Image (cartoon, rainbow, N blue to C red; front, top):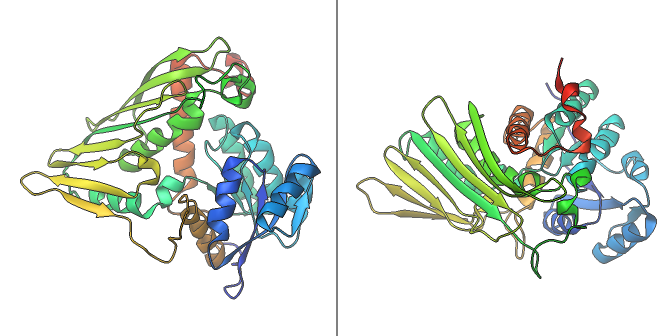
Length: 351
């Protein structure tokens, strides 16, 4: 089903909700598209919103979220808060009838994700997770080759993503160490390798995991082993204590694909077919590519395409897939013993 499409003869007008680093990168990347315009920004207080607006030449700044979602000239809201606030921020926008592109991890848990999906469908409003990996043209080509059997049947997926602070381990007071803010490696970083495995193999049938936990109870270093009834496995890891290559390899019965560091916003990969010379595939210089971009323009362009077509969700980042990834992340956290205040008590999960 579709909603009324946006006009084709004017830019899509974005409102950016939050003013952190990912909001800055999105504003630069989406603002570089010829058919997009950033018209408003909101924060929890007026000062950071005004500072952000002044830095990027944004016409309107709001010191609260309500002002942004009520702005009649905002066509779509980009939610860039920490994921602990995604449920509240995206829910506010959807309730106001505003389409939403919401950062990942989509929410803290599957329950919250399901509430947002149900709200979007109830209001008949577009909702999409900002899973830029799925919109990346190089990753899309990789997935197409895999679907077409270029490496035979997929047997293993390996991917990692680990970081650490500039001056050593993240301190105890950092948001990545705070359970109330959804801290830990899994939601911030593990979502990338998990989503990559889902893209190629779908939702796993089995989930195993092990982790080193912090004194606060969040995961510092996590290994995940996902299994499918087909016999395929995915060996994935994430860390907030060590920088890892952030590379990926997909191996099949007739070859493999190697993705260099930065697999989640890949600019190239190498296809190794059995009995053939390696083939390198690189990003082109298409109309969406522009200098100094981080790659977030592809998800913005997909959201805008959907709005102009009147679609309620993206076929590249379907809501069913977002929910499936959240179920896997929940399963990982259950295996390693990480619970957030927003999860409630274990007994609340029954019935």
